[in-house]
Image 1 (cartoon, rainbow, N blue to C red):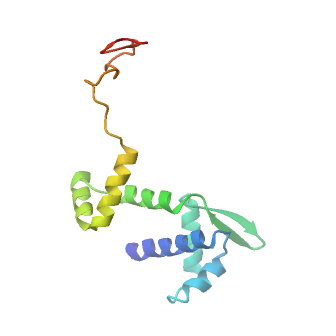
Image 2 (cartoon, one colour):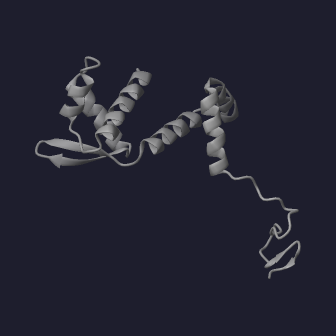
Image 3 (cartoon, helix red, strand yellow):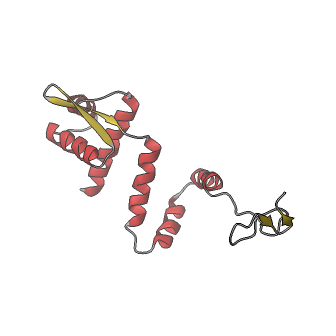
Length: 145
């Protein structure tokens, strides 16, 4: 049931991003019904849940609401991955298993992302690199120029 709810949340969010405009429960319902039998109240509940989680904002339009995304698909995906990782008692082991599920292309994308997000630390022995400790205006190669 939890997995199905997560899949439904993703299906709804995908539509909201693709349509790139405020949407109503009825619009989402009609589109989802092309793939599965689903109740109006189920779609309404999931949209409300996504609103309460902060992923959608809503504005009253007559008796209904219009929903639109608060952030990008990438931010949403990152938050889902972070939430899943936070449930583990052993985050390092969870990452190892996750990496084992990745395709070579996904692992390469991860390497690229790590290079952007976490550049390698500077070499403390390199000329003109700051010495650790208080900022004195000096480097290992001498006073600041």
